[in-house]
Figure 1: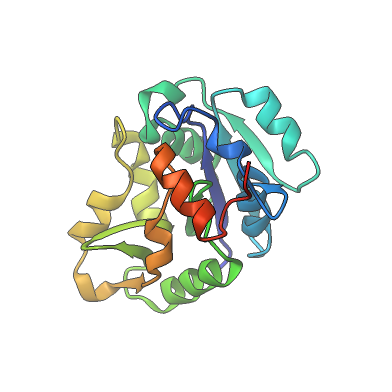
Figure 2 (figure 1 turned 90 degrees about the vertical axis):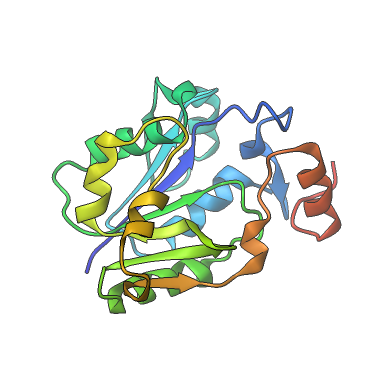
Length: 199
């Protein structure tokens, strides 16, 4: 089934002290890399949800076949970006591939594995295992992502996935994706692993 991809990139990275979207791996910014990887999945549409410094961020991915959505309520947290994406997809009734730009170890093969897993799963959903929790990148069935209007704060679709019978959600086990970039210590660790270019 045709899918859409949504790249979440609206935050200001306050704890990190610099925009994580602009950090680089192999010379490419993490925002550009995430958006580019999303385009490799043959998505019907690729939406990039921006907030802080949206103009500069949009300009940095102008070469890619993506649609930028400006989330004016980005300071409210993750849920506001998911609500903005859902509004833009009002006429779409397929699965949504959701990814961020702060998992520097993310690879295209992992996104394809999630899409394949979701296609075979009874729930139509697939998610990345983060310990006992389920998180992004993830593929969310339309019946669930349409509930985005009920989300608030920094909550995503994790609670909705948790309500589903465990055997109906395909899980990607990729421990490297548990390393995101929230703090300076996270950044140093990512540089040590070669996932982020040295400053």
